[in-house]
Image (cartoon, rainbow, N blue to C red; front, side, top):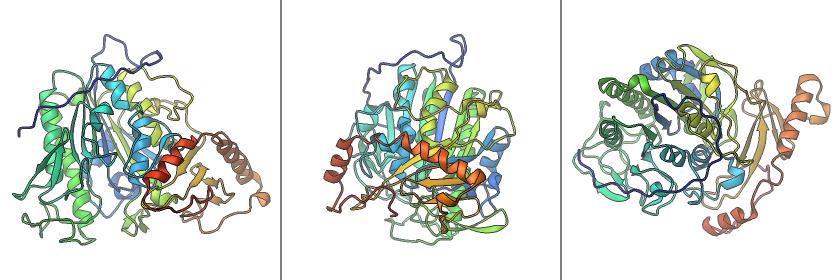
Length: 453
């Protein structure tokens, strides 16, 4: 497979020096971050999922570290902005489908450290042709960059911003995966970092090439849809992960490559799966557990011990400092960097676990400018509006508890979470809301913080 000549934009990033994890004498590891699209915690066999076969991910989990309390934002773009920048959405999120081009991403840090960088998969962060390069990715092979064509059968892709259209029965995830393999092969003699935001298994739920009803002549995203195809899409995604590890092994790179896998939000709303012997319903777009709880697997042979299962809280803002720590790359010291490295925990060490997570969630999609702001632990959740839940007993958040009547552990948790929220009281720059109001379709007034969507 041949690709047009890659674009390259070199950015100067001023970073404060911190001690790297590894010594300068060590070979720089390759890093691959895989982000599945609309894949909740309950879908992976290693986590207790019973509806889908995920043998490749299960193997990565068994041979590495599996985290049981990783949380994303409830929607695609908010998670991607947070994941790439290490900052909470309260500080930098503008609106759906957009990311501020002045922001620093983990790709900048890796490029500065001498890595070849690439992004392949779903973009959804702005339509300007050179944006991936501005954000630190020297090469890009993306769906939904400058336009929105089909993503599955006979898709449209942009390579470094140049449109490519396929009409001969090609499958979008295979094309993207082929680019990833090609990039690895071309740069196997130098350190590389690949951000691989998969398009699978997001709706529309259409056949894969492994499905019995696969139609290589299908055109568009309104055809051949059925909820039953979600299973095929999850299992095809898993197969691609296995092909990736096999490719690394064939090139002798597996022992020096860190693979991190997670989901970008909960499973699509209403999708029913079997999880630990019960029915589990996906709730993408909602701030309940089923909308935010995602799988997280970290695998690096010889560096991440096999069989690690960790229940520490992990936020998507934690990934830039974690990936940089694993690669021994300095991260800039900043009071607005909300991420915290969980690399020690991936290695089976204690690390510095979080006591709580904070979320500022506002879809900013169409005319929805609503805001839900909350802090939570694995057991309790407090909204800025005052709603308090025991999410272990009430995962659907149907029965708010009266904070004034709480005692014992619940009362202490409410106090801790209230203090956490206070830390972010003035964190939202006013200019961002002005930009969001300008960019978002419609003129709906901003709703009070904490009001439900």
